[in-house]
Length: 276
Image (cartoon, rainbow, N blue to C red):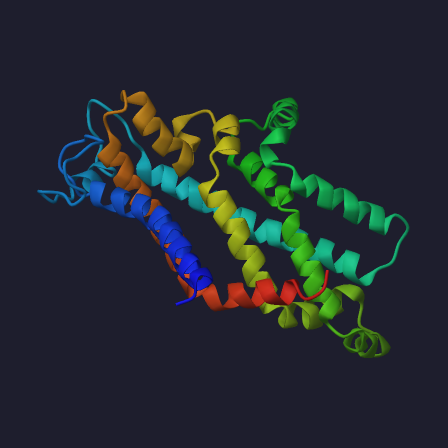
């Protein structure tokens, strides 16, 4: 075997270990008795499902509304996915099909702003939401996630650029409006890119912690990321196995979603990257 190929395999093995070990450790810790972070062996000596049960059972010494956090996260992720995908597709269609003054400048501005980490705008967003009295609201979080996914628009624009304009011209001759063309012609041909944008928007809202922690204040409105962090922060860092069980339940739906839409996700990435 050539040294270059051998190095590539070794590098891939190291990357695989770095990715799989934390997930495996978290899964096995969720079945371990007690609440300790450390153990002599990675495989539990005694297996238990008590931590999963404790997430949904109220106790007198603590209140963990895990089901409420799960429902809040699901509401925010689904609403952000629908609204954010619609905004990105409409914006991408406008930039792809219309030629107007300032188009290139606006594209450059959106691209540059998309390169900055989202948390740089945290103070400005907090101030705006506080002024509008929207703090501690799930709708505020939905608006932030929906309006913040700019880079997905560029992938959609690249895909729309590959759709022949002759299809639209034929529809225009038959009297179709731009919205009719977008809904009846563009969207049915854009299933891979719609899947990609929807999935990335959903995953971003599902796992975000920074904006959720800054905007949501009361435990009843927390999402899973904020609630799980509070579990190990509020109880003197002794509930790590409970935290691990919560993390495993968080990962299940997003893992199933990625597995089910994997083919569409790859198609969307390759199709959107064919033309910028």
